[in-house]
Image (cartoon, rainbow, N blue to C red; front, side, top):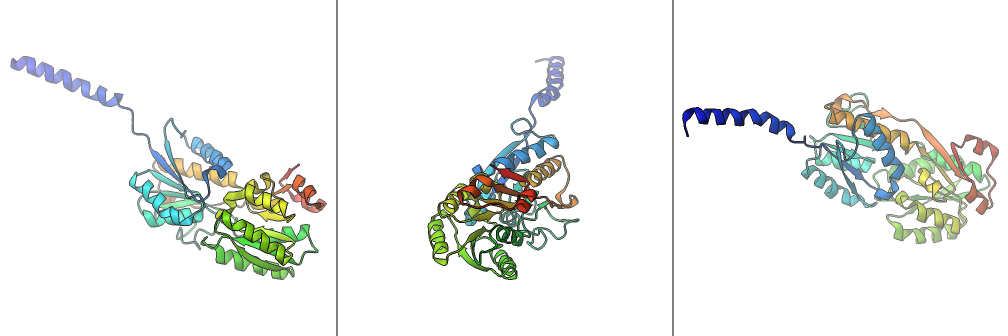
Length: 325
């Protein structure tokens, strides 16, 4: 090949390189979503998360890919699940609970983590400060655990003659001891005996309700933990045993449970989506203050109340954010 022909060929090839590079689709960022409960219990929460992502300019399948991981209510599965996400080098980890956030924090100090925590994020050891999180974590802190005593009060307001109630708690959850202590203190103030019953999985439910019957308990409070992933099963058992029951999650009332009182998950998960999108655009978790979501909601299933032979006081109905009929 003559020298002039070689130079011409080389120049033509070089001219095509930028065009070829521009033709290559950009690598799509990946978000890892880490659940503690079953993924099918997060329908409304994930819809809100996607709305938040869209507000920040991201739509799954178009310009972001999402890897979902669920521990199915088993806390000991979280380390392996988050290790898989770290190995896949996801761009951001969205942890949908305090235990999931703690597992993610233990697994990586470099991948940004956006959490939704029902506990005090500072007290739980997730961040150094709400205004200045530092490190690679930020997110949303809700009032789920803090309003636990209020659930005891609401159930007592509905059945004021009750003297004995049960507290269903998962002993494997990191906040089990705190919740048990705080709710028992609230019960004592109201003159109630609150018996703590433990269930780490669905297989324990029948024994729990049998014990409640032996105790002649008049009501049941369900603590914040993984057993809430079985809302339908718990709601059905509560109705079958004619036991007024309150949970923190609205999906419990939607599944047939009597009452739910807790954080507004729609608002908090939307914010998790917004923060995830902002981090994908280049912002740092350390610069994004933890959002304190103070929205709580009371949901009452009037149909279940009628099935239990209960009349909901007008004062209680008037405070409900949603009444299921």
